[in-house]
Length: 322
Image (cartoon, rainbow, N blue to C red; front, side):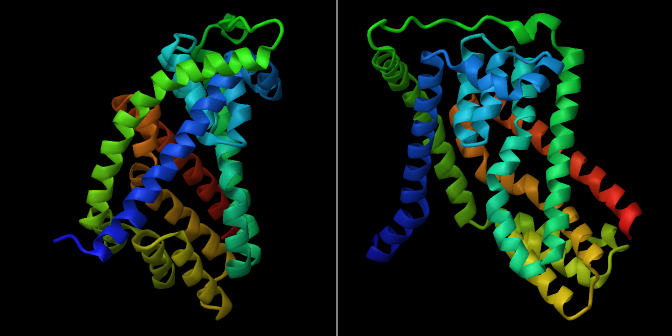
């Protein structure tokens, strides 16, 4: 028998989060279609023009880069629409998704900053500065990679023109967007809902908690770190980033660890804990925007590049500060 408590739990942990995700996806899709219908792609691309020109990336990629500062979902939806309309090759789609690493990082920066500063104080500025530096390195590297892999004339590619009504272009663009939105949203929902429910079931069964706990308990290969540092990693991976911060703050306050050690162990924890959380939180909505196999491929590349860039800045920091 289903009790009121069970229904409340389902609503709070499945129904409402899923509904909220679908609302955000719908808003992102509508915004992306509206921008495309108004042919604003080139105007938005001006912000990223120096980098896209360097990387032979198309104006659509530049526009998604600009939009990503405000909405990652809208930016990814723009890329998915461009790929479906054959405005982007598969190669450029992967590069464009990686290229958006910098604005995507800035989206979460305020939350991370205002949580970290009160807990680990000055170490927060160094930690955030290093993660932002890693994002800048990723974006610059992708621009250079695009310069090698993409054709020279790609950055001047012609966008598909959608003819607006001369009297009222906004109304025409909105009408065209809504027409395409109805067709596209059905496909997004058909992928997102079952995948989200599956991942909810895995979460309730304790799959992700067990995976994170397993990783947190098998850190013997990091024996070169102090026991205090390993305790931060365990909290950061078995619970969440805030738990790791709390442990780091306590150890910093009582003088058990230096600020430099705190920063380094948080960077290592960032690398180790991100993949499982990316699969858990990113994949359900990525699979709604892109096809499931392509979504997995994009997450794999983004997490790999992210881990490598953070590892690089962590190694540099280790030799410069430790």
